[in-house]
Length: 419
Image 1 (cartoon, one colour):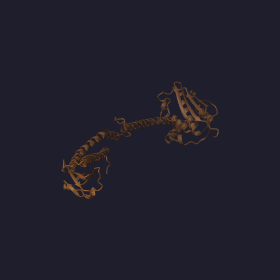
Image 2 (spheres, helix red, strand yellow):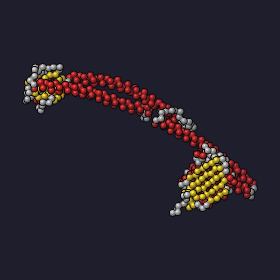
Image 3 (cartoon, helix red, strand yellow):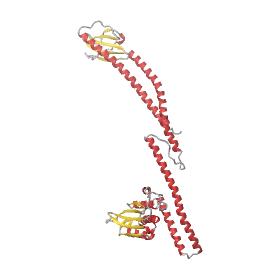
């Protein structure tokens, strides 16, 4: 059995509510009218009985005649009927027990009676309830007719309301269902700022994020292909030279350096894909000065610093330093890069400064995002991995830049004395 549509479920739910409301309202209306009629009759009988009892006490009994549909009866103390103006309204003796000077009303199947004690005996005033029953019967017919008129009318209004309410939602559902990896444009529907409108906005934000991610992926693949193609071309050229002249040491060294560059690029790709920069840490007591000096010497850049120890993974920290220094070298050349290390309170402060053209201000907030590419080139991976490594060690990388001066500041917690 196929699932019910949202419109049908909404229609059925509100139809049930309308049915319950209508039945309840008509039932309460009927009960209210019945209580009002019976209450009015009871109040009239009590008032007449009290007036008649007062007249009897004053010796103004007069003639016992029915007046205005009310019948007067007189019973002895033992319950024997003295005067009956309507035989059908005769009360059994059990009903006359305990009658006092304060009027009280009893109900029977076809009449109501008010009883009160007087000097002449037990006075009973009765009145037929047939008019009330007929009125209630007419009222029930009218309420039933109203039900058969109002229920389908309400159902129609509920259907129109459900259709009107669900139309934009169904349109939004069709538009969302039409989206695919090849079609990620936003849903062109504007709804009020309610739950459904927020849902469409959230879907549009998700589509926009997916579109941006897909564009970044496409850009990354193109840049990664370019980054790999260039060293591969160089590597193949030098291998060809070595094939012709196996003793060409310069070609061998260049091929080895090129292969190392490719290896690091592939490691960066794997680190991002697996999240290894954040997860696979092998902590040791690390001499950060020796580590920074090694990375600076490897790239041929200037270094100065004091002895600083941190707790961390030396391989990951060295990878972070290499990525930062390589970024500066691409921007300013190795002569324009300087690495410095010092203590700053409870942290170790490592600075990598370069004299390159600077980073555009609109790019700075996104500089450490994956696939974000600065003006110095690269595949947009190194800075993202460097930030991930710094955070995995409880630190952070900040950057400030202007034309001719860019500084990356790495803050890492110092090794505690207890450690």
